[in-house]
Length: 101
Image (spheres, rainbow, N blue to C red):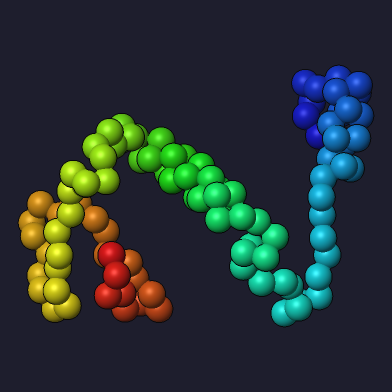
């Protein structure tokens, strides 16, 4: 409860929350995260774009303005050390470095 919110504000927020779509599933019986049966490819790309845009904003970096054909990149073969100027963080899974950055 917000001590600065009026009772009318709290009631309005409570009514809005009551309309939120909520589904309850038994543990280990939740549906798959695969949205391909209920969304179009364009909708899924739109969802991904919003997540990518938010991640860029959170990183504090400007959104890239280059086109796909001029996108910077480099190929690092398995076991090849990363260059000193590589600012990507290696992923760690179960305490071990993952092969994908």
